[in-house]
Length: 290
Ligand SMILES: CC(C)(COP(=O)(O)OP(=O)(O)OC[C@H]1O[C@@H](n2cnc3c(N)ncnc32)[C@H](O)[C@@H]1OP(=O)(O)O)[C@@H](O)C(=O)NCCC(=O)NCCS
Image 1 (cartoon, rainbow, N blue to C red):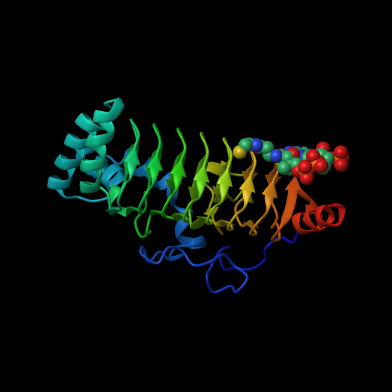
Image 2 (spheres, rainbow, N blue to C red):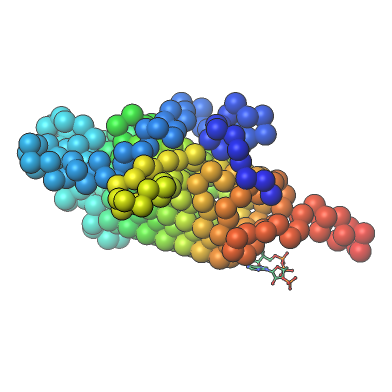
């Protein structure tokens, strides 16, 4: 496994070995890598306590991502009356009304109860998608494209997709288990048919800690992004660090801490994760034994 030294984010389409292009319908690009992501948390905290701004202005900025009062009214009415009802009525109401808030919603998209939407206009969802109960879709950021969810994707209960001026792309037919977290301060892509077990954490950003005179909280942040390529399976409770590219057809063992790239077809596990097998060799052995 080689640590990526490429300054381009993993999954950048200019890399011929990188994952395939994001969904064409959304036109998402890795618009904001390292520099722009160095504001996020502290800036948000500052904005929250900025005495010069009204509470309403802060709310619009942080929750809606736009200043339109008409949009605020629509958001408040829909989330207040439609976000929580259980059962079939709730599903029906949300499927009809959430498209009025989101950037794009395809056909046959199901929203569970208590889904949280932040900067909803920057959330694009294709056809035949399930967003389970209590999912958070947070597309926050000033200059990002936000969250793009492809066809046939399942997002499990309590999963959080969190942008801090970054982009998250979940490609076609990917399956995100319960209680996962995907954080992006630049660009994080989960490939086609990728399978994430419960409690997987993709940490698409990190903190600098060079200085010892100020808390890490106030030091710079950086983000190279993460790519988990097509047909890869990530086991339960795995943590994938910023800057890592996991190739296609890989398996990441349960509980792995992945801090370096994993080439295509490899099985890796442990903390830190080490490659211990190539899936093609296993298959070849099975053919010989058959
Ligand atoms: C990685 C995995 C697929 C097993 O692959 P495998 O090729 O069958 O591996 P083996 O069981 O032969 O184990 C090979 C070695 O790796 C070790 N290993 C396997 N999985 C490991 C893990 N998750 N963490 C640490 N070590 C692991 C084994 O202990 C063994 O070590 P040894 O050679 O020193 O005895 C499996 O262990 C795993 O983690 N599956 C994910 C389960 C999960 O999260 N399911 C959620 C449902 S979506």
